[in-house]
Image 1: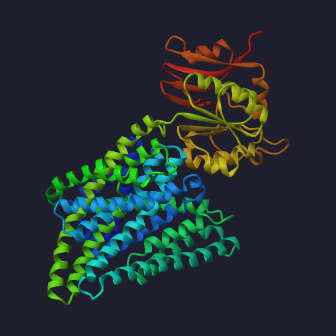
Image 2 (image 1 turned 90 degrees about the horizontal axis):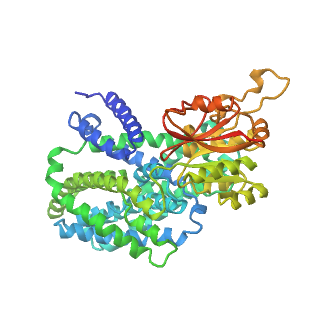
Image 3 (image 1 turned 135 degrees about the horizontal axis):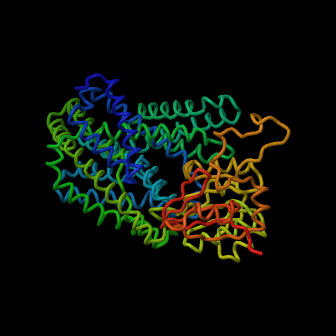
Amino acid sequence: MISDPASYLALVTALGVACQVLAWAVRIPSILILLIVGFGLGQVVTPDAVLGREVLFSGVSLAVGIILFEGSLSLRLSDISDLGRSTVRLCTVTVAIAWALITLTGWLLGFPLELALLVGAVLVVTGPTVIGPILRQLRPTRRIAALLRWEGIVVDPIGAILAVLVFQAVLARTSADPVSAVLTSLGTTIVTAVLIALVLGVLLEQAIKRHLVPDFLHGAVFLAAAVGAFALSNSIESESGLLTVTIMGVFLANRPNLHLEHVTQFKEHLQVLLVGILFIVLAGRVSPEAVVEVAPVAAVFVLALVLAVRPLSVFLGLVGTGATKEERRLLAFMAPRGIVAAAVVSIFALELAHAAERASDPEHAARLEHLGTEAAQMVPLVFLVIVATVAIYGLGVGRLAERLGLATTSPQGVILAGGDEWIVRVAKALGDVGVDVVIVTVYRAALQRARMAGMRVEMANLLSDYVVRDMDLAGLKTFVAATDQDERNTIAAREFSHFLGRAHVFQLAVAPAEHVGADRTETASHLTARTPFAPALEYKELTERAKHMDVRRTSLTAKYTYEDFRRMYGGRAIALFTVRGREVGVVTEKSSLEGELTLISLVPRED
């Protein structure tokens, strides 16, 4: 039995990371594994017993605030320049319709009206903790990814504020003017959040731009500012901290010439830890008896959410916007609930119990105590909703997105950066076997050749904001930098590693400088990407040799192996890509090409 908080937190942290690694390996939403592991651990030791309820919920609230701040730092207005109206409607009208429908569902299922309103407010949220992993796995089009990301992050504080307003209305029932009390709370929340967010945002912006904070402290300073803003805002108006950190993150993300990539990377790593810890800890508070008791109601609730509430709220909310029919259909079946729903319902169940203890009117105290008991029973219901919606949407959205042409469950496309003639020929060969290829170049001759060959081409600087941030990566898996500038290849490869992973990013071999020792000419290994092709050639040699070579597709089998292929051309061929079924790979000098596959290569041109 674990009774030491340090040992418990160490175990939860290790399990949280292990679950996410396992989820990545088997390609299922990590939240499912985290909730199952957390539920199992909770049968051995409960977080309340180890940490105490007050410390537990304070830590959960703070962690949720940090996660929302990290997510809001990625919300750039340029991402929705063509989706402004759709995004606003998705985060306002759609939320209002969903709240009304969920409240009605809860009331019809027998919930007290106050509790139905509270659960409705809690369950309008989706959240970055569930949307982010699904988007990383699915990698949909830029437009649909932007809509889902904005909704997931912006609606989280809106749902929390709605829950606060319901809570305030319940507490104000005995006051002379409950409507005035609720409106005052709403106004105070908005004013407090905006003032704190903008003041701290401006201070952070000036501190970074004037170099008042060293680079190595940027991440820590931003974290401290987010935590401070969250706590200060909550001390002024309860549960306003989520809105504060969200506004501050969006403000900073859209300031001109404020480069926060290193801060965002720091926050992303922190988010991975916090998500794992939070889901395991909160799932550990749910008992099997409570789950069994609410399971029938939860099943009806989930069916209503998936089949009626989400489709109706999306289609009615996005009527007359710029969202396409396919985008609306995907949005209608993509609303997994996340950590904010779990945290908020748990916190308000506790707050209702505390409010009952403080109430002076016996009748009102009894009413609050009854609602607190009912709200506590809603905690397992919300967790079942989280598990069910993550499973339904996380496991099913990929096939739907593929049918709608908005994503692929197994991206295999290739980005070839460079403007040489051999690149267009290789891209054409890949396209002929069904591989999606994008050529990125600034050369008009290459642009013309690629378009004549029917290839998709992006006329852009490889290091431009468009390519690094805005280019649509739907269906793309591999990046090969093959321009005539090694430094450009290196920088671009490092940028694409953040999106595609180092395993799928390559750059041509770097040419060493002349008349200098090897230790001074070789680029540091941590600055370069993997080296493609066999043999691995530098740009100049590869380009010269390719002028006298043809691109060839060769079927390798047990009877005609890669060694037979090499002997046939006397080692003069250059192996480039392999296609095995639907799986596309880049050949390297360490590749073991066995089994049946199609090899795409450059071979000496026949006289």
